[in-house]
Length: 364
Image 1: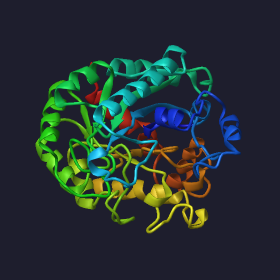
Image 2: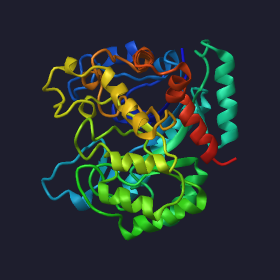
Image 3: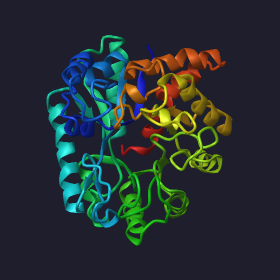
């Protein structure tokens, strides 16, 4: 089974927002939720740490995810109670709590923080030497932040860097303090421009996922450091501002970025309406379509990868037909093989491209 590096998993948010014990086997975790009706994904989780090991997910980008939204939520407006907070102070505190969850699991040997290329190489050697006997190994994680609201001001970047943060997206949905994200349109704020300068100084990787088009293009102009798109699909296949146009994808490719394909059905099938359309209209092959599209744009396989976003607010109720857990990412191997992809190219997509990217851009 080919090892996987998954560039987007909201592990701490899923654990703390849904009160899930991610150290449990997935069937146990699902069983605890069978009676719950507060969210469509209850009883349909796709990720736990034992399930990641079963699927040989050796490394992931594990996120801190929380938003400060008071300024764009008028009285009576819509809030995501599992995401939105009244102030940046709240967002900062919640993100620190999410980080503490990762630190607790790391102290227990369930996870291993990866902050340097040396730590990455050591962790990868451990997993390679273990073969399929990885049941007791910690899963490596590179700390990422989805939406920069927990960073109180640009001068705080060195503080977060010292805590191990290595990749940051400027916005999630709508407005953040620093940029505009999915579902709205607008440029970087003055604080966002300054934030990028601080990223440049410490070596932070900029994740352009979720950036609105104006924020995307401005960020690329303002920032000359490493960029990636941790979980992004292709607008040419599924229209909408959550996906990126061929123009945007080509700019990312020119900058040496890697782009992780997402498993959320509404990003894989045009006009898909979650929980209102039959799940079986979306097949796992659709994920391969987006991977293939990026490879065709690049003229090679060096920029396509996996950024599943599994359990990022959706469960198997909103994954392609046949994808029940994170283990099913391995079904992509036979699909890509059937499309003429060589084993070396499939290995690059599963882990090699991310491995090379982080070997270049993590500190020594």
